[in-house]
Image (cartoon, rainbow, N blue to C red; front, top):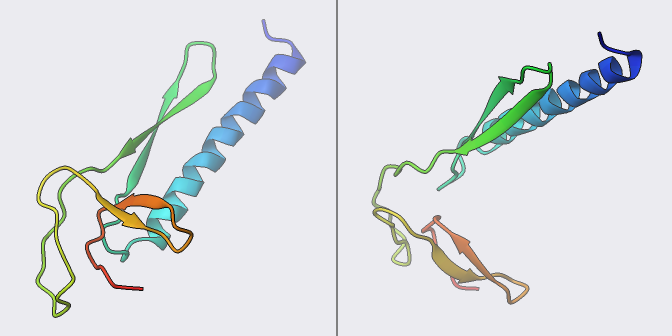
Length: 102
């Protein structure tokens, strides 16, 4: 038998999980045409106690390699990331090979 506080707690937890799932869906839609974007899948599990748990799965599959007219463009075949320097001077990692100077 559940008390009212447990029912409310489950409802809040499950609503939070659904909100997080919508965030990943929105992010996938917003970045659909972004070069080198890796989509995320959100999987839900219902535990025995009625709580919903979520797991995030990142798509790490190799995308298509296309030729371009930019002589600085590169492509990664297989695993790995390209270290780049941001405008703030920090080293960041990307799989987007559309490089430019400046």
